[in-house]
Length: 473
Image (cartoon, rainbow, N blue to C red; front, side, top):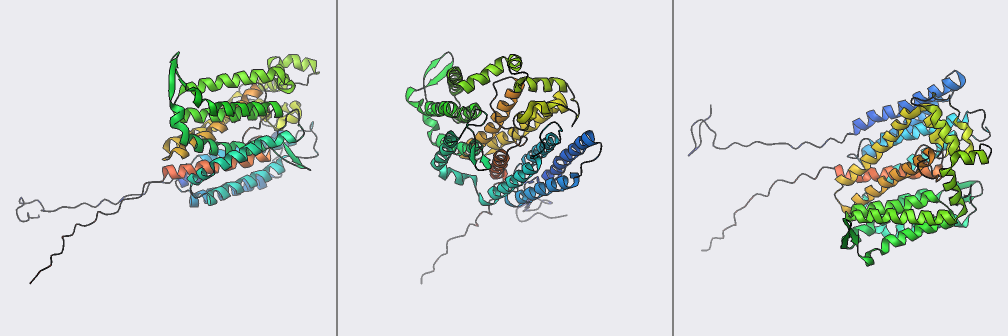
C-alpha cells in the first residue's frame, strides 16, 4: 500500500511514470530465407521430373544444379540481409523461382533428340544467371540510396538513346535489328535500355508533372492537355516509330512507349494521357505495318496463322505454338513429354512459353503468370510505400516495364497480338535479359528498403533548465 504524496489523495501515488521501449520493425529476412528454400526446391523437383520422363533416371547433374542454384540464392539473400535489411521479402524468392524454372525448361529443350546437340544452351544460361546475380550484388552494395540515380537523369537519356539506336548499324537477325554482334559475342541493348529509361522518365516527370497535369478543355468526359504540353509524348512517340521503322523491332517500340505513357499517367493522374497514348500507338503501328515489309509479315502471320502454315509447308511459328498450347490442355502432357521442339529455334526465345504451356497445361501457365503478377504487385506496392516522388515513379516504371514485357511475349505466343520476338523475363534463353532483370530486382529492393525502413526514433525531449541568476552585491 502506498500513501499519497503532499497534496495527493490517500492510496494513490503522487507521481507514476511508465517507460515504453520501442521495438524494431520486423525486417522479414527469415521469411525471405524460408521462401528461398521453396524457390530452390521447386525447380530441382522439376529438373528431376523432367529427367525421369526423358531418360527414366535422375539427371546426372541434378545435385550440382541444385547446389549451384542454392548458392546463388543464399549469396543474394546474405547481401540483402546486410545492405537492404528492410526490403520486400518476396521479390528475391520470386526472381529465383523464375530463373530456376527457366534453366529447367532450357535444359529440357537441349535434351530433345530432334534438335541439334552441338551447342547446349543450359550451361551458358547458368553462367549468365551467375553474372546476373553478381550484378545484383554490385547494385545492392554500390547503390547506397536510389535517389542518387536522380542526378543522372539526362545522362540516362543519352545512354538510352545510344542503346536503342546502336542495333540499326548492325545486320538484321531474323528480320529485325535487335542485336549488336562482335565476333561470336552478341548482346541485346534494348534489354539494358528498359533499365535506364525509367530513370530518365522518373527524373523528368518529377520536375514537369505539374505542367503536364494542367488541362485546357474537357471533351467527352476527358480533360485534354494543352497543346504546348503535348511535346514530350509526341517526341517519345516519334522515337518509338523510328525504332519500328529502322530496326523493325515491334517489341522494343511498344515497351519504350508503353513505359512512358504509364509513368506519365501515374505522375499526372490524367486519364487523357492514357487515351492519347493508345491512339498514337495504334496509329503509328498501323502506318508502319502497312508500309514496312517485316512488320507487315508479322501482322499477316498473326491474322492468318494457319494460312501462313500452309503457304510455308507447315513452317509457321505461331500456328505451331497454338498447336502446342492446344495439345497441353488443362494439366499438360507432363514435363519432358511434349513436342514443342517442333517450333524450332524459337523454342528457346519467346516461344519457350509454348513448351511450358504444352507440358504443364493451362494450370501451369496460370501459375507462371501468377508468379509474374506477384513480382509486379510487390514492385507496385513498393511504389505506393515510397516516401519520395522519384522513388515512386522509378518503381512504377521498372515494375510496369516488366509487366508490359510479359504481356507482349505472352500475347504474341498465344495469338492475342502480333509476334514481337522479345524474351520472356528470367525464363527464356538470353544473357542480356537475365542480367538486366536481376539488376531491375536489385533497384526495386533498394527502393523497398528505403520505403519500409522504420523512421528514426526521436530522442528524449530536452530538459528545461532555469536561467542562472547572477547575484550582484
